[in-house]
Length: 257
Image (cartoon, rainbow, N blue to C red):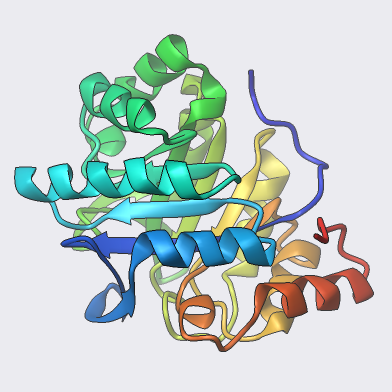
């Protein structure tokens, strides 16, 4: 089963988890604590978020154990779908996190290194489980994919990789613009519009939200299916209920609780 476009637009808080705590940085660095990931997730669920994304940014085996425990606790506390990612390298990692209660799995670096991982996940668990996350940076007018939390350039073109990921069975594309991440000046709407036009699966915008208008523009200009953000939600700069009422007034189809 592949997710279809054209449904209500989704608002997705993203929680980066390090050593059991939510953290947030700017341009992928300078992390600061944003609180307990389970309590935050429950608050977002109660406030009307459509989905959540949890990313494990602690790569060690001890970090994976801590993160799996967080996923188990989240699954007990919230009643909306949530995606988990970070450090997923093989089917065993996927199985571990789905068994802990995750609804979807996000793969990034491992899929770029071994694209067959997407085929494996889609074949074993269904396309709806597989979110292909892409961190890309625009340099000289060309969007290039990066590995390892944005530290290593691959030279691979964003659009070519997104198309291949779809063909291999990814159910959604989660695109983070590294140029826009954490700087709160809006999403990379031109790139998002191009992705949305060329793909038949949902596109999730990430990187750049700083105002309610930025979400509206991602939906109306970028033509995305969902918009993800972190710090504006974590630090109370934008409330999900307020955001959804604003979007509704702007003619964007969103679910109001």
